[in-house]
Image 1 (cartoon, rainbow, N blue to C red):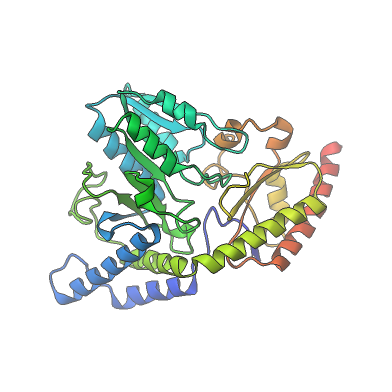
Image 2: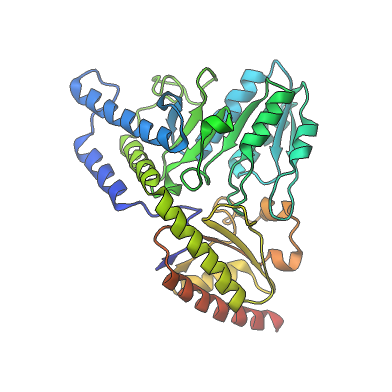
Length: 382
C-alpha cells in the first residue's frame, strides 16, 4: 500500500498505539476522582498537555483538549464573537477556509454580523493589503487558516496579526492550525494570535482528539458545559487514551522534526521532478513557499475522482480535495477561490506525504499515474 492521503488523516505511530492500549488497560480511572488512582491519570494528562504545548512554544496552561480541530474552531469563533460583540459586528476571514470555519461563520451572517471574505491569488496566497484595508473600529474577529488543507499555502500569521492589532487592538485573532501543527515550525508567542486549533490525527496520533490554544488572560464562554473539566472550558470526562496518544504524537513530532522535515522536503522535490518528467498538461497549484507535506496538482483532460478509483485498485490512495468536501456534491471552495481554469479543475488531485514515503513509493505512484492518466484521456476523447 502507498498511502498519499495524509492530509485527510495519518497512520498512528506504533508508540501512539502502544500508549493508548496501555492507557485503556491500566489508566482507566476517572481523572476527576479524588483518589490517588484518578490523580495519577490526571498527572499523565498534564504531561501530555506539556508535550502539546512544547510543539508550538506555548505554556501548558494555554492548552485545552477537545474532540478535534472542528470543535476547537467552533469554540474559538463562538467564544470570541460573543466576547467582542460589544465592540462591533464585523468578522474578517479568507475565501479558502476549512468548512468548520465557513459553516460556523455562516450562522452569524443570519444574526446580523458582517462576514468579510478576503481573496487569494492563484496559489492561495492571501491579499494582506485587503485585510488591512477592511479592519476598522467595528472589526471584532479575524479568523485565518495557517496552512491551507488543499494547497499547502502558508499564511504569514505573525505579520498579519501584528498589523491588524496595530490598526484595532480589540480585534481577536483565531488561527486554524490543523494542517500546520507539527508540520512546520510554530512559535505561538511570535505569532501573537489569541487562539490556535490543532488535531491529533494529522500528526500520526489518534482521531477524535485535538486541542485549542487560548492565550493566557483571555476568557471566553465555553461551547460545552457540564462537569467543569479543562478549567471549565470543555466539560465532559476526558478522553484519556486519546489525550495520551496526542501527547505522545506531539512529543515524537518535536523530537523528529528536523530529520523528518529534511526527508519530506527531499521526497516532495523528487515527486515534482518525476511529475514533470512523466505527465503532460498539468498545473501545480501549491506555491513554492508551502507545507512540505502537501502538493495540489491539476491534470488537464481527466476527472480526479476517476483517477482516484483507478489508483486505489493498486492500493495507492490520494484525494481530490479535502476529506471534508470530497464526499459531497459541491465543488471545492478553494479551487473556486484560486480561479482555476475549468478544464483543469475537474482533474485536481491532492498528494499528501508522510515520513514513511520513500523514492520507491514515488516511482511506483508515478508509473501508475502516468498509465492511468493516458488511459483516462483516451476514454474522455471518445
